[in-house]
Every structure is written in C-alpha cells, then in structure tokens.
Length: 147
Image (cartoon, rainbow, N blue to C red; front, side, top):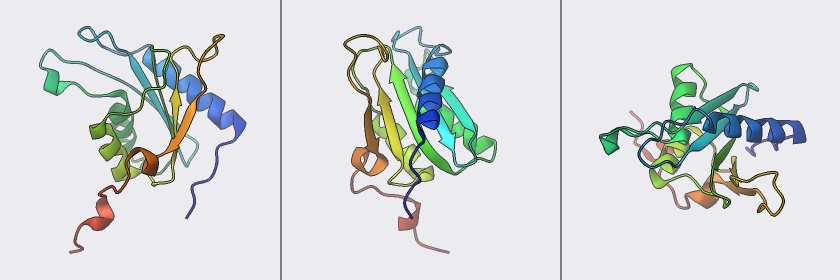
C-alpha cells in the first residue's frame, strides 16, 4: 500500500514543526542541534529534539525522541518525517535512527531533509527521500519468525 502524499500545508507544517523542535535541543557537548517532526496518519504532529548526556551512550537523537514520544502515547502509524539541523546542508538520520524509524514506518514514507538555513537566500533545496532509499535492503519486523 502506497503512503499518501503530503499536501502543501502538511509539508509546510511538518517543516516548521521540525525547526521549532530544534529550539529545544539539549546539546551542551556537540553544540549540534537537531529537530525532528513526525506526521501521524491521524494528522497529529509529534516533535523531537536531540538530548545529549555526559555519558555519550545515553544521548538520544531527535528522530528517536519523536518516535519514542509517539509510540509511548499509542501513536504507531506515520505519514512523513522532517529532520533539520543548523548546518546549511541536508543532514540525514544516523544509522541507529534509520533502524528505529524502520520499525514503525513504511518503507515508502517520505523523509524530508531540511537544510538548517531553510528559507534563506542561497539555501539548498529540501531533499525528500523514502525510508527505503535511506535504509536499502533493511531488516524489519516482518522478517522475524511468527509465534
């Protein structure tokens, strides 16, 4: 089943939500703010930011924060994800985030990679990729044996 495409309003709202989420990033060590926003199929938007920890392994990325917030509130069906940082390039989710996204999202779900200087003169275009493009030949829940 194909993932429904985003309307112009949904796209703009999701981008702005990711930008807004970035403002809450707790990153005293890397100084690398990341914001993410998930659009649930219900229309709800769930925001996440990166939260660092002095014990680096305790750090959680913005994308995983958004997924965990959504799932812990019973939301497990998503239409799209937007991710942004402060750098002028489009930055994609890390490998661990890609795998967590894969657990809950369709392979054809759009992932909007928003440059940190979005809306500024000379900004690079938003890059839209599917989860399958970000994580080809992925391993997912459907590969596990059924009980």
